Length: 454
Image (tube, rainbow, N blue to C red; front, side, top):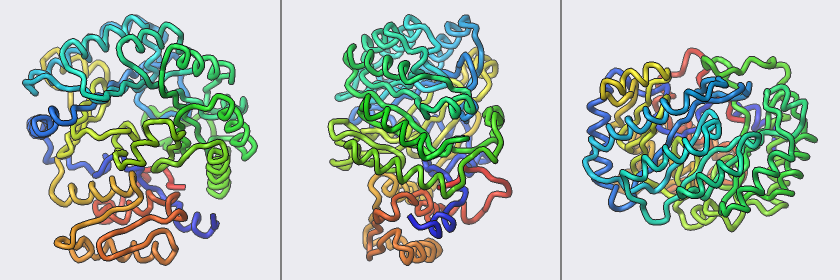
């Protein structure tokens, strides 16, 4: 990849797990009632056809990883588990009252924090509490994020018993210097044990998350991490650019200085090398940052055009409605977004008063819905189309100007009613989506809100 393109397009930009992006939500016109109404509408339209997705945020960790920008609570006190599970089930009950019909669960994902901070029995109690009040959709998929150091056979078996068949492990990098910098020490043996245990029990998809652009990380480190990955051959991989967002309150991203981070040029070389080595092993690139073997459901969904993207990243199937439970969780009705309060005490207090613990959100207008569709298409299929009756460029000429410049850089091809991202343009898909992001263009942020795109 040309350094000139890296230099030109390496700007701060969203990852587009939603549109509008969170900093551009219109909180002023949002209300809990508007959110409930948009979810009810979406649920009534889609539940019987495709089911719903559930994301459950489990925020506790025993120690802080300094590369992490997630909402978490550091504690070694496991007495926090039961009250939290009871609160999540209470929140689920409030949603059941609103929806007034049994949900069909298509996807369920446990994220964190560290979901395996919770005991196997408590995780089982949480999932059974959900399943006892709902139905399962056809071809449902349950997944969780596991920490290789503390995911035990008992954790894997307990979750397998209630329907989980997919687990992803945060690996990041196998080099000890890098691991010390990000406060995430986990030897290869631990990842190997956790991966093999999952397969032995019967999990059909094991994923690994690896990151480039970490402090002190070299090309050799990336190469070695992929050699180790080759030995274990996970079914799917997230190969992320480290998102350096130290300004996020509580992110913990102060364990190293900016000078310890690779330059944008080195980061891009790490990505190119990683992508090349992964292809040699047999991984196929899926959308942005994701790779899968041909046998994995993510690859199959890309092939048949069902790939979807939401706040959980890429998923193998689309649901119109996604409910997020737990502190800081984000929900998506397609017509609107909402986010739960971030403080555990506030979360408990609102639930005590039988209030769904949402504190902000956004109801999409007609323009938002059109742009959202195009950004989702670009992120999932590297192309988007529109009917000739609504020429997008005629309505939004400012988009065309930006796209024409990218076409001259050979990042995309513009046709009468279609845009297609080229192979050369795929690493810059975030930049291409930014051309459609009218909210970002109309109001450039005063301070840096997003990580760098390269």
